[in-house]
Amino acid sequence: MPEKKTKYIFVTGGVVSALGKGIASASLGLLLKKRGFNVDIIKCDPYINVDPGTMNPFQHGEVYVLDDGSETDLDLGHYERFLDKSMTKDNNVTTGQVYHTVISRERRGDYLGATVQVIPHITNEIIDCIKRPAKNNPDTDVVIVEIGGTVGDIESQPFLEAIRQMALERDPEDTIFVHLTLVPYIATAGEMKTKPTQHSVKALREIGIQPKVLLCRTAKQLDDSIRKKIGLFCNVPSSHVISAIDVETIYEVPLHYNKEGFDEIVCKHLELLNGPPDLTDWEEMVQKIKHPTHRVKIAICGKYVYLKDAYKSIIESFIHAGEENHARVDLIWVSSEDIKQKGADKFLSDIDGLLIPGGFGERGVEGKIESIRYVRENNIPFLGICLGMQCAVIEYARNVCGLKDAHSYEFYADLKHPVIHLMADQEGVTNLGGTMRLGVYKANLDKNSKAYKAYGVEEISERHRHRYEFNNAYRELFEGTDFKLTGMSPDGRLVEIVEVDKHPWFVASQFHPELKSRPTRAHPLFRDFIGASVAYMLKKKEAAHNKADNDLKERQEVS
Image 1 (tube, rainbow, N blue to C red):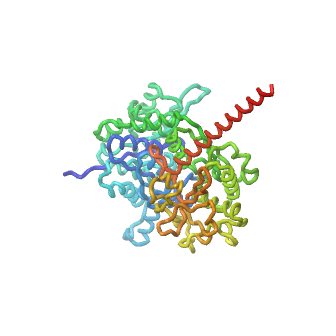
Image 2: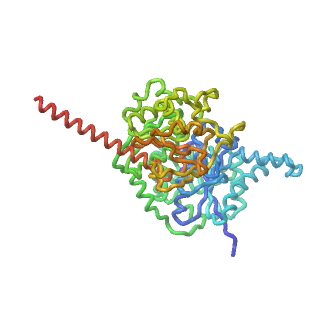
Image 3: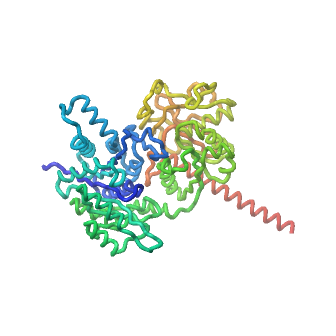
């Protein structure tokens, strides 16, 4: 029986960054999976950092953590959400990883004295990284490889050379190049301009890559004349010039690409012969997102609120949870520093729920603590994540248990009451990259808790990214109060979930639930949090309606 050949789809981007290569790759992956193929996706990042774990969220967006503890690019979140598949460290390749491996081999003498060069040593290592997922899983039918950055960037050239070599080594029907580009609309001229796309494809062709499909990001549908012009100057059939128009939700992108025939073109070229995809469940999900019954306002209080990509998975989790509750979630972005300066009432008086996300560093922490106090005292639904849980512990210790100087050891080493402390296995750790408590760990739930009601099981498994934890020396402080420790590590040593008992919905977790939420299966904590927020919103509306009725009756009686 002949050995199965894995097909490779290489996705590149041109003209400008942030066009959505990750969404395009994930969307194509979904369409192929719905056709019955076993699909994997790799993100190749040209930066020299080994991973994004030590990078500022303002520069790179969120760090997406996998089950195996790998800190990866946020695009892997898109891959997991669209494919409903857990990725591994093999799905994210960076220049830093590649050079680290090659230099380590050179130091060991593995190259037998040869001059180590970009070609072939760096490009060979990139090729090995790209082939690794299929090698580890021989059942893989298709691997989609997204090349980060923009064609023309110096740092991405070794990756482009590597995929050129891969295509050269394989049969023509085993690889395909897809190029995502921009076709801007110039309002003053009333025209779409194809020249940026022409130059971008020209740059690719100069290094030996001829794209077979062009995904043209545009605000308007491309007409036939524009398609023909782009096809003519880019050496691509006009039928392979795809309109990648703006849509209401990213989950609509696969449906649009399917209507444009994108997956059909790819399958025909790669000789993938399965029938059309069954998108029924995806279509139903998109319709529920676009046509909600309710609307709720959820405040996100953090310090990265001016760069929404820092909370990408949280944003998507709210879409999933809203869809399951027939609600549109309107996010209110609140700077924790503004809360500290101007007070919580100014920003939170009209919300239906509050989320405090994870983060690092002292800046903005006092604003987060004040926000938590406000929603706890006013019975507004609350969800805390990682640092959000730690802030909830500090707030309750201060304002209910009477420890006015309670705080986290992360911010002040000389504390009388460090209710949050450094984990024992983090003592003496000096390297920042990849040294936190990372990846998936199990936890046991109290059967009388809101968390258990959400999950419906006693044992859960969630992803973590932290160095600090609830200080067990203060467990007795909370005994007999409404503040309950409802989720614990299997050995009972680590606090994973806390709740306020006599509150409509007040839950906080040390782990990151947003990393395991899916479009067709919202995370239980997000789902129930939004459910509680919808109930809170409806109760407010009913109270306002009753008040208006009473006021009207009083005016009628007076008259």
